[in-house]
Amino acid sequence: MNQHLTSEQISNWLAGERTPQQESHLRECPVCAGEVARIQTTLQSFGATVDRLSEQQMRGAPQSVRQLAAVRPQTTRPLRWALAVAALSIAVGLPFYERTMNERHRQEMAKADAALLEQIDAEVSRAVPAPMEPLIDLVAWDSTNSRGGSTTR
Amino acid sequence: MQPMATSTLMTDAFRGRAAELEDFDGVVRLHWPRVFRFALASLRDRDAAETVTQDCFLKAYRAKDGFRGESSVVTWLLQIAVNLVRDHARNRRLQFWKRNRAADFDFDGASDEIVTRDRSPEARALAKQQLHAIWRASESLPERQRTVFLLRFVEDMEIAEIAAATKIKEGTVKIHLFRALQTVRARMENLR
Image 1 (cartoon, chains in turn red, green):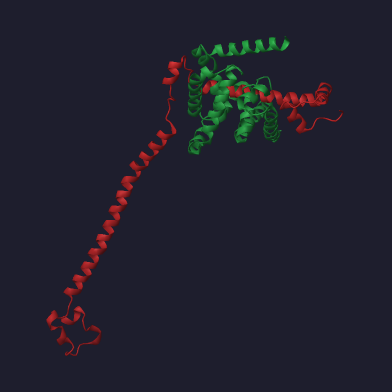
Image 2 (cartoon, rainbow over the protein chains, first blue to last red):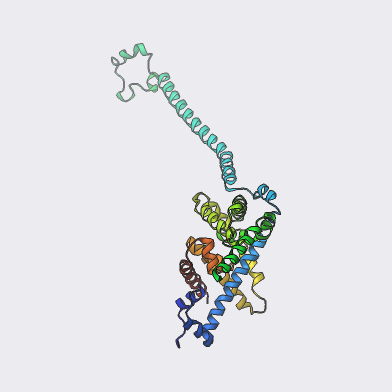
């Protein structure tokens, strides 16, 4: 085998699928041997890095089966997180919700008050008392002011 | 006579492995870091890795009387861990939390301690980038490829041991490993 190993052949070799021809080529070809060695070194460094990371993350191994049953992860579990977030949402959201509802209620009340006041204004500004209203048609009022407050003056 | 002798030797080896479990406290102390490392590399979540490791040893303790010693104790433990990791990873409800907690790892800090200082600053930076690329690429691999890749290059297991731990044929292990390597190498080459 004179040609260099292809990328697929190198991956296959690293995955444990090795032919005698490839073995022989790797013994003779410094380019391919160097490439395989470079990848192997990087993968070994990767394994060592994960090992180091694991040492950093491990809080300590239990020393017995009895301890094992008692050990639980010390930080909060996802369910606890979910409950905490839900409680926080309620705590933050409830005053806002109440404020919104109060504001809406206040606006509705203001609208009702305004309607009532308009109605009162209309009642107060009648030209004549209600029982006398039929007589208005008999008087020659200015057509534009037939019911306005100014007509009473 | 020869097959009988071989058979006796194997039986002795199986008995010896099974006897290791008699001191289960010793098994916990010895193998906890390795099971935790595999769970951590697979799940990228410290709490989840601790839970899986704990469940793995509790399961093993309950099942120790059924262990016949066909594989080594650590391969048997990793076989249990592989199943627990798979079940855990499939729990979609935890995916959101997993993603959010994965960022907590200081992979760069860990790789800093591994990459040798006798290289030039550029070479060190490239080596660190490549390690980070492998870390990220291995996370994105399909479940079986990732498991096989981590067992081979983090746990340093042989193909036969990986086949025993994952309960898949050696030929299939090699195929998964080949595909994982192709993906990982492609990410590494992008940096060169």
